[in-house]
Image (cartoon, rainbow, N blue to C red; front, side):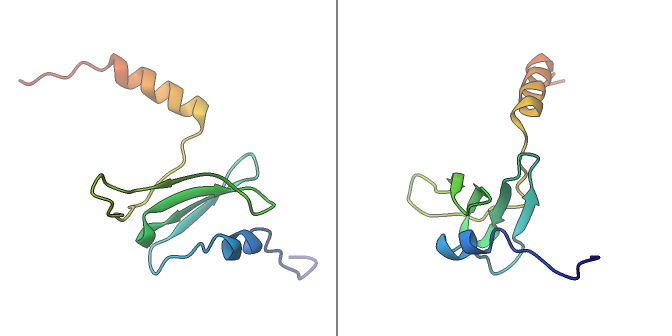
Length: 96
């Protein structure tokens, strides 16, 4: 704010990879400097690095080839995901 300037480090990546959504898209800056992006209307979640390269992407495509919407996706860091998997594996559910 003190320099009264703004940076758009991911703009070129958005343009190059045609990243867009009509409604409800979201983005989150990750601890490693990458950007997690959800294209809600196009069923795609991805991560961009600061050079605008796709690090990984997921398209919510069914076996019939149709692409379905995403809804409020979240990125879970690998360490946290491992903890969650372990906790879920230890849960015993009852049908009672």
